[in-house]
Length: 294
Ligand SMILES: Cc1cc2nc3c(=O)[nH]c(=O)nc-3n(C[C@H](O)[C@H](O)[C@H](O)COP(=O)(O)OP(=O)(O)OC[C@H]3O[C@@H](n4cnc5c(N)ncnc54)[C@H](O)[C@@H]3O)c2cc1C
Ligand code: SF4
Ligand code: SF4
Image (cartoon, rainbow, N blue to C red; front, top):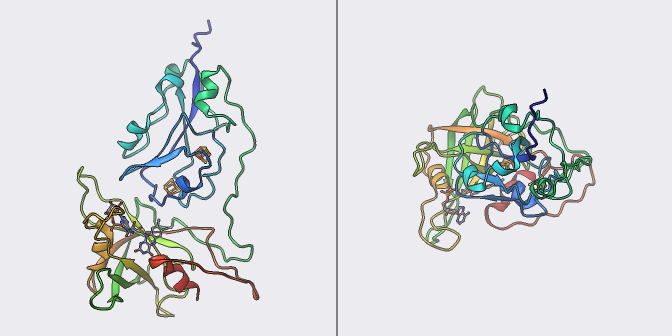
């Protein structure tokens, strides 16, 4: 006898908190505002996401490309997702009314709304490639050292670039990877993992910093790269705060060891053909990748 129960299911779009580097690319890309974040996790609103796939390709880590078959009534809320340190497993078939998890199926309406209306979630071909590199860019290696497997770099330079008397402080940091391969291109970034734990006792997540030196290093012939890091001493509202990673990096001494993940980014790259025209516009430490490119 067929015991399958008619439970409405959705393909719920989720972000893997273990490998997400909190770069905000997906939130900035999503055309319908389905992605949001707290100070820990980036999450997807099941009742807003229409599975258009626009966020999949730009994500530098692949953490955005996760899906769970869920009964509509049990779709994970964003509050649940904010509390995750890892993704939950797929539910067993008996909790899905006998339905087997399949490949995600993009819809034109939010998956929840489609299921509520009694429709199966229908699919169209995903529209990948919203963010593509220049055709002549060199191949970018990404995720060689993911958040679970960072590598160690040694600080070989730390120079305060800010003139005395200014409240803001920006440091030029040089990291050496020794014999550890760490191939990078101009326009990519790395993640620095600050030591210690946050207020909830969880290890600090990595913060990203743009590479501010060309692909052959700050000092050509050495396996090194430069960063340009601004101390965060007040939040976006101007209230005093001590940014975890920026202050850790700006306080590093020559010889200190640093945990590094990355490299990240496969689209914001230099064209490699002669006579290409480049216009650069930036503010503040947004100049870091441009230093690498010039
Ligand atoms: C792709 C990418 C490249 C980046 N490249 C650089 C770079 O080259 N140089 C660089 O200095 N930073 C860069 N950043 C920003 C960097 O990753 C951190 O977000 C920044 O250093 C703050 O981290 P924190 O740990 O010090 O602050 P947190 O401890 O994470 O934050 C403390 C408080 O300050 C607020 N806050 C965070 N950042 C700022 C800010 N910039 N101004 C004001 N308030 C802030 C937070 O909302 C929070 O309330 C980059 C970010 C991305 C996504
Ligand atoms: S799949 Fe589309 S709607 Fe859903 S979060 Fe990504 S960009 Fe937004
Ligand atoms: S790593 Fe991917 S999922 Fe995480 S914030 Fe960046 S784009 Fe979004």
